[in-house]
Image 1 (tube, rainbow, N blue to C red):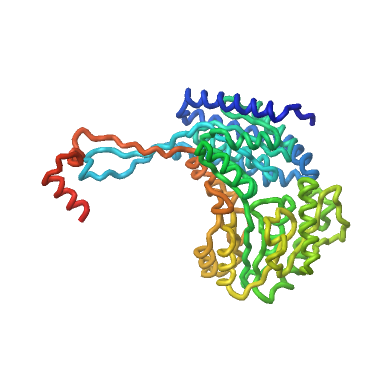
Image 2: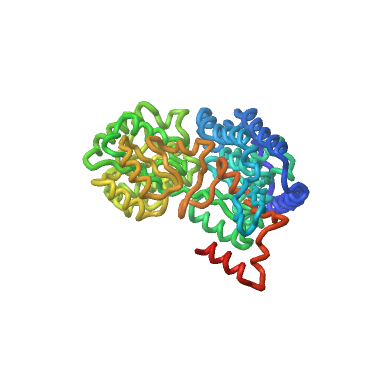
Length: 478
């Protein structure tokens, strides 16, 4: 694919023109109708469904290897499901809500709450899910009646250009636009006076984005990932549990912010876990490097970063288990890696200090769930937490005594595929939500509206304050 030759300066100028165009369009239509929004959502759905092959080709070109089936599962199902769910739910979401009124003071006055579009939203989408996180939040923004400008990651140029083309073919620029470019454009993008800004990436960059947005007091939604714990209790150390963990860990070669970043297993069950992990990988990926079902690491920088984590573990004499069923040699050219387990890692290992974002999985054993909960709570709040247990009491204990962006029980990552559930982090893993009703709300202003009744008791709130108001206040504040 030949990419348009455009400097960041030109991209920044285009961004400002698009922003001004969308601002003007928003002011001409600040409350789009239900019918307009349904039409927009239908266009998103059709745009994705009619371009599945183009999207698969772009992802494969950017990653080196990105299975077509995985593209449909991990990149297309999400935004299509969200568009379909929003279309079914939109009339209810848009309907103003009645709220109670204090009849003693305000008589027959009325309270209602309406959700109003905030305006123009910026979306900085990441390289690991360039389609899903470009088009999924677009669903939420359009359902809420907003306009959006998307800046895809420069690390996936084929996807970025395709996103630009698809949006250009589907929507007028005063409704949805796309700008492509590098670091200078990203800095300018985060500093624009958006009505709302969504950023998906790492915590360190997220802090810079939030600082830039603070110049205009721009509301932000940050999706930042983190080290997601997976906890297995003794009653559910099974082939099914471990296969679920291994299969999800290998999605996009571990380059997923909601995958397992480390696993807690009961003390004395390490060998059993390793055996189950070996069997699972042998079944799922009998070959890893020479296999079209396995995804490449996105680029040489990240491949070398992950190799550095392995070297760091070896240099510090960590117990490293390579799961490589076909005993394939490393392939820096294809940027593919086997899965590595790091058993009982010391906390100073690089894999314990950073979000891994690759096919490396630390395994820690525990004596009690109290120890596990204490460890999780002593560290940054994760984007997701996973529990494999058959004991509801243990599940409730972990859920009620930890805090995370989301939880899945006896599964990994599947909570994010639920169109009805919000997705978002907390603390170091982010703030705000998209997906479903919470995405609609997150990109709206909840506007409270009070309508005075012709006759009520509100005049008692004004001076001079006499006996009647004193009696009323004595009654209300008793």
